Image 1 (cartoon, rainbow, N blue to C red):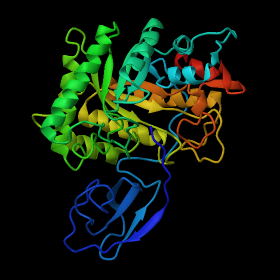
Image 2: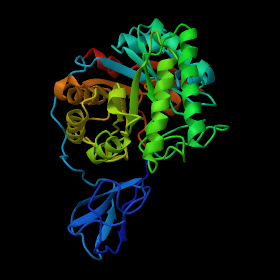
Image 3: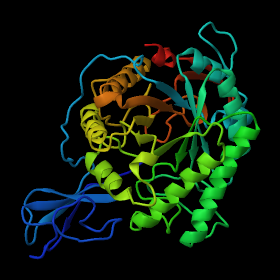
Image 4: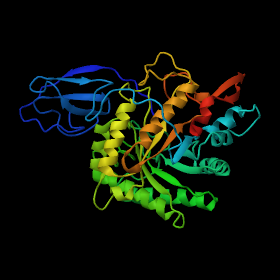
Length: 422
């Protein structure tokens, strides 16, 4: 999860006659190494400050390179997607509840169920049809292994399975931040050993606590790699090795009941990004597709108006056809209240009913993927009342309406809590 503030910037570049073939991430030089120019007939366009692509346009000497928050991507079409849908087709119906216990400690909120009775927020979500809880772990700070184990026990007691999201950082890891944990080595050989040992120890700790991890992410939104600088995408071989070492550690941590492996990057609507990343990450002797149980993507409606349901469908369909791996939308949400923000699907209202509609439509895309490869959707932080915008500029994306007595909230479930019953 991350928020962006993107400006539309126009840069003039001189394209040489010896320009390279157009390829994703190979122009402009903002965040990637490689050729700075496009062939004649193509223009270097930026989707945001992290990556660029050569797209059909007025390429050639003296052409203009444009950074835009809504540039197009190959094989994608703009649109709102088809109407209707249901979440009942999903195998995995999840919520990321990572911040729940931290907020409970700081603010002692009261969560009410649909009958107005005091209840556990995890139980309320499970009663709404959720069957999976996603929990992040940092290498330091609030989101510790023991913190996640305690939440995982609550989720298991409510009948949910558990997805662990390893950030491999002392703080937030996302496309713009993948800081090496304090005290970790930076040379590749030692780092391979460290990520293996650390991941194994995490999985073993859960096993010893009587809470088996059902699925685990080797990194969070790792579009630009992880464990920088060693694991940056400029070093594909190194990154592939590190991911494979993390995977091996996860499997070794619980050989009797090993977790399924997810690899997760952002912008699930952007086929160019997904193809560029997945085509490059496969390295013989390191991470290959057969070692990935699930491909995970993030899909948010507030950071880029290009993040339409139509483009999500195109991208995930292309991914299913090209890579043949099961796919999960590992992060998404929709506002119950939002002003001053242009959403990618303006026909869906910012309301509790809109939250349900959004999830139904995302589920419809996922369930419609070829060969049954669409598997699940996870709503990001539905209970985080003290950060209700959830990283966006919207006012409230949670699934609970809070009233406040000073700094202590009482939270009643919105109708969207039952999104997974639809």
